[in-house]
Image (tube, rainbow, N blue to C red; front, side, top):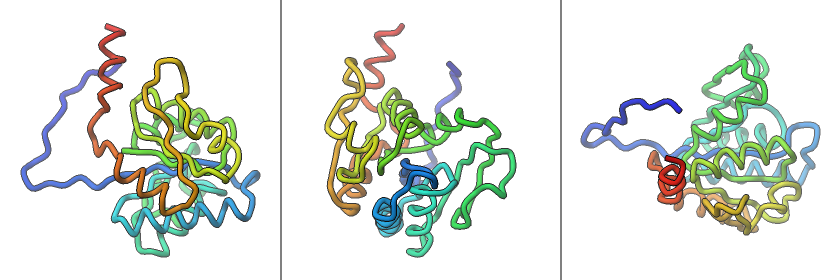
Length: 196
């Protein structure tokens, strides 16, 4: 584990809240899921938060489109080496060239995570965020991973309980209000202390 120097932000500096939206890719994103994710993106932008996604299609594209149409800032962290793979609604594109390992970058970049639908890749991202003690909110009724993990702990360590809500506005409210905003959760520190 990298041990760098943690820095205190300058006085008067306010970090923007970064909310990651994860879920079904373009091949598995049903129309109602796309619309729900678009509304999630819209609500993130309305709160003045930065939307972070995996930068590709499906839920990622829909959330990006919703945020962009609201005038929000959209960051796409893509698994490819070329920026051209990103959806057209990304303001900032981070081409990692890491393939599925980019899920670690997306999860580490978030203050909180919203899950809309999703499959195995979504579950991996949620697990990474879980291990880091980040707030996770599932949009119930969107199917897939979101419905499976809503209201649960992802393992017996009980690091953070996956919260749930049934509307895009409610999931964003929970994600925003519970965002770590650069701070690690108490459960994360407790788990690290047990490992030492």
